[in-house]
Amino acid sequence: MDVIPADHDYASAPDPAVVDCVLCENEALRKEILQLRQQVEELTMRQRCGIHRFAGSDRDIRFFTR
Image (cartoon, rainbow, N blue to C red; front, side, top):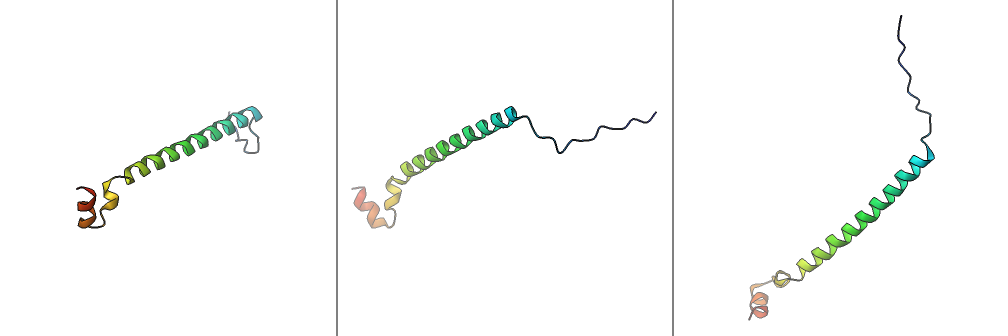
């Protein structure tokens, strides 16, 4: 007796509840990414406000560290 393997059903549509769940999760992850990018930008801006922003020349460093 030959066993015929089951064929894939590539044309079947997923259950709408599953699609809704995935879309909600996707949107939540997009919001989290946006929030994390804003945090990174804020932290980067804080680091740029240090003395190294005046490091254009030794004269500038001496002026701001007296």
